[in-house]
Image (cartoon, rainbow, N blue to C red; front, side, top):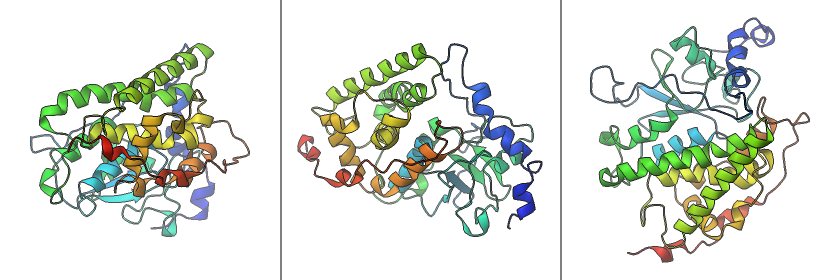
Length: 335
């Protein structure tokens, strides 16, 4: 399937895509200038119960963009658990257009499995009246070409639990039953103050809202800096779902958020423990090999509707080779 020049140049054909892509400014900036992220629309869980999405190998395609932290964590978990041959992966261009995420990097300018150019197509397939942003990660039923789940907050948990029959041998237990309550509680904190906290800073439309988010972000990072001073990971010696969620923000901190979102009290490399912890994860298979710093910079500095950067100049730095320097975090393990 290909997209004709007439289709690409005719705004009428892309009216729905444009409406979806630009809805962020309408729905997510509050009266006080603060940013409130839209709720997920497609939240049907995966499982064996009636009404749940069936867990079947080869049925779904996970769509993501390397810039996006929410999508990145599902890709990390997919790889850690060995689900690459079970759930296929479609990668959008990291530079988001005025019509939203597009698959223009693939041959023919469309996703090779779904035959779509714009992510919004699978959203409209699922709900012709959908008017929110078409977001990643998006799990799509390959046969119907409809998005069936875009619940980034719970998606990794589904991959870690009900998808366990397809895990590779000796896959890590990222969501151990005895720690799930504690992991969920920490994930809530990480989401509100750190993962979404950087966006609250970057998308704030008042000084007060910006400073409130800024203070919450760095107060929480200070707490985690202390927590990681005497243990290798957030829950001790083993990587959990919480580590994945924290990592994706840390990986984007110095290359994007510090400048683009004005989160400039400290750089990540200024935190001794968080910086060592982030390098430890980066050097773990599944983390660094799914982290594309150039795509992240392009996404934040050259995309439509992210920051005001009319010339689309992409920062040359910082030097990302330092992510491969020794971290010595293994010395904190109790084993």
